Length: 186
Image 1 (tube, rainbow, N blue to C red):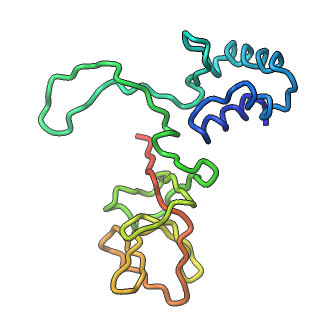
Image 2: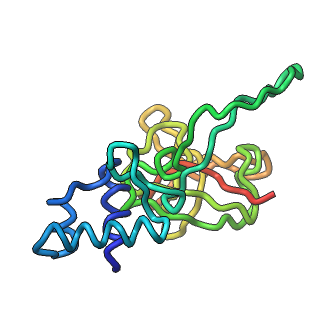
């Protein structure tokens, strides 16, 4: 792993840029001068930039996307573009970077939840699954994605497609991850 990637990983984990001493520890450098040179190289490469007081700020390679305004999903209103903010998709979607991964969806048992064959789902292994969450689960030796339901002391999996029946485990049910986002390329 290169030094820039270590700094990016630090930012994703701590939601802030590391200081000089932290960068020395991350990189194994023994001098602040070596860190200063690394920072200048990262600025030249567009990985980071400096604000007016010289503090490091992450650049586009960290996944920042501008939030330009609001869009009406009801009655049409006059649109007005204004640069409201920017957000990182990682910050928006990922709470536990080391336990988050993507899966490609196969099948149509979740179409009524808006999840279609070929979509990607972002799942988190550390998220606690509650009643009504969409989960990735192992049930009776097979893997599936369904709603987790808890009713009257029973736990079962419910599809989001009327053509499919709920799955009541015979041998066992183990939730492996909770679905946090659905991604579909239009």
